[in-house]
Image (cartoon, rainbow over all chains, first blue to last red; front, side, top):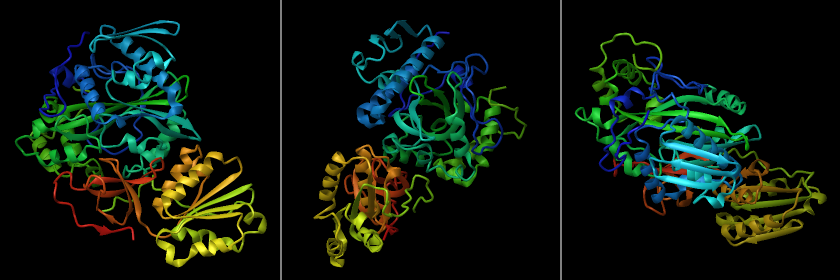
Length: 347
Length: 201
């Protein structure tokens, strides 16, 4: 299927919208009417109804071009959003290979990759990029390989190195994050970078997740969904710019909930990389407005219940305190109390 | 106002001379001198003859720890006029250090953070460093917004010494930067920052 890429913004006038088809493919993160942290990982294999964001392992959608333009703007303002420690070069090439392969296989109308030994030819039609280069020779690309490919792939990307029985955040391209700083966290181990998350440490979630990930195998990626909420469709909700987007949280009124309040879902996938034995951690962000979300009755009912019954620690950590009550009230109009079907997909 | 209980917060397990080391390097600041003075009587001549001490007295100058350290028969004792000067010499020494050296760091958290960072920059695993917190609880904090570092932070919130934003001090710590994280406390309603509370005396 050929995609039509939208012209839209994630800042200033916030012209981002989802088409009806884009709403139906949204990875809705709640499989039941309540939410608590869990090691909710499953094999990352193609799934879901036709055209769902789960169909391809690296998803490309109608927002691709606009998201890449937003990433370029973020990097121009703050180059520290991309960092890679010096020992990560092999993992950088691993990542370039994986993303080029997946995008070319999943969306051949838009991307192609031809290989003749080490001489590779990459075409990214939506962005007008046509590049010959030598795999493994960074001088044949305009920038480091990890930066080159992640300027052409939706989502944030972290490469974690595995050593001493731990995982280390040693490289990242992070411009669409839910309020965490790559510049601060780069070089940290798994427990350190998850340090600020409440409740989950006591539940043993991170110990189990770390054990699981240390044993992640090649060709068997896994995925999980995570979520938060964002006021206005802003991709760059970084702590670096918190003083610029924080005031948005005080602008929600009963009249503008539908347009301003967004559910922000992260489709996270983790891939063992073949040469470096590092793990690529993909954090793909999807946004949906409340007025778009309630067009799917099941999601309207369920999200109302999840948000209404959320534990106080999560309300605080996810920064929902100011606008949760007004949002729950608005959503309640769409919840008739009827039971919801199991699973995340629309009925 | 402090966000507490965070797992990245460092643990300082105390310093004790390792009898198997071929060379001992003590990197000390202020009250950190006591971490060595308190155990000096137990150190044999063998260890003392292989021990080098770098010391910056900073706010502890009137307590004359430096004179007590100088009076001991260590292989070498050197007192720096400031932390910056001490760290410069420490960096040069690390550049030529060989296997078998043991590094012991003691002082305020901000000092430990900077010394550990210097060692990491020279390829030393921070887990192999012995550290002991002595003296003030004051923190070294990086502003997540402008990336400027403010030393000796005693309150939260405090005013970033670079960009001027009022910052909440989080218990999230980066070994690489050697600092805690500071985040704007009144971003959602500018001008409503609560008064500073002395949390790190």
